[in-house]
Length: 432
Image 1 (tube, rainbow, N blue to C red):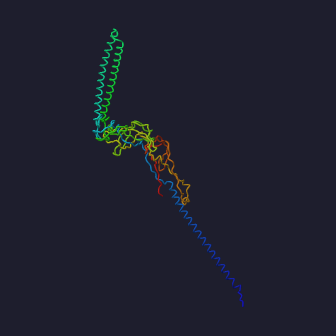
Image 2: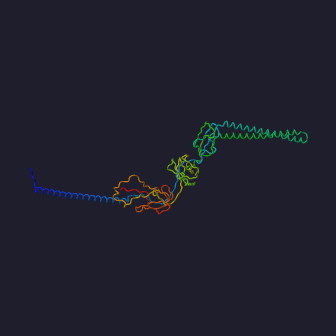
């Protein structure tokens, strides 16, 4: 049996459901609207705070450097050329023997003071003395032969004169006269030969005496014995490359400093310039010197070209010794009472800061640039430069013309500078 529902009873239930759905939908819309407004307000607050922070951050970045300065001053400038070398005697002689033989006596030792003509050593002279005696005997024999030849010549001359008279008187024959003339000529020639033999014998005698003198090795100069390479009993062999027996230095109270000057600096030095130098033995003391010679001959070592400069040195107190290594400062130029700026100021260039107006809040969130950036400008050269003066906390450029430099300070020839100006030498960014 089918039961049919009454349409009049089901209609009200449907209407109530529709009303409930519409009420819930309206409430959901209102809730979503309130959530959207809350997110919008929060976003505006965040942006406001970030904007204020960025304004403060970017506003301070324009003055974010601390400057290192030095005061421009008036003073004296000394331009130096530094060179190294060694202290040497002004005169040094290596002594060898011209004769071969055995050393009999040695009269000096290291550091011995000698004078010109002092006997340093003596070779064995027995054979040399015998040679002198033999040569003297030969001279005497030759002279006797000359005397004999002279007598024979006188006899021949007398016979020739007598025969000439007899021939004129027809007492003697012409043949006898010719024989007498021949004897005279022979006697004259014999005399000349004997006289030449005397000269030769005398020369041999002088040579023997010289060799005897050379057996005594003497000092050719006044000075000090630096080295001695021979002892009594040693055998000396004379040759083209004879061994050095003694080395003598001249007066050590006057010495010289030989330094190697770089080819880039040799144009600035000249004879007569003053210098000072130091040696390792006396590091706290400086010694005066003066250039007395600049040699033209180049010296090349490992492709580096230098020129030898010789400086005279007074060593009256005998502190300096031959061979000491020295470092010299040659005074190339001295400038009195000039404006000086530190060389660091010539190398300083302000860092390029970004314009404040070109930066905004979004720049804070940009990712950092990757890779190196070369922000170093090449060092300027030439006499015209720009330096930066700090005035009221702000760098101000000043164009100047520079002159000589000693490596730390440079002379200013022209430019709007005054004593007491603070010149910038460096700048460092402040910590934020």
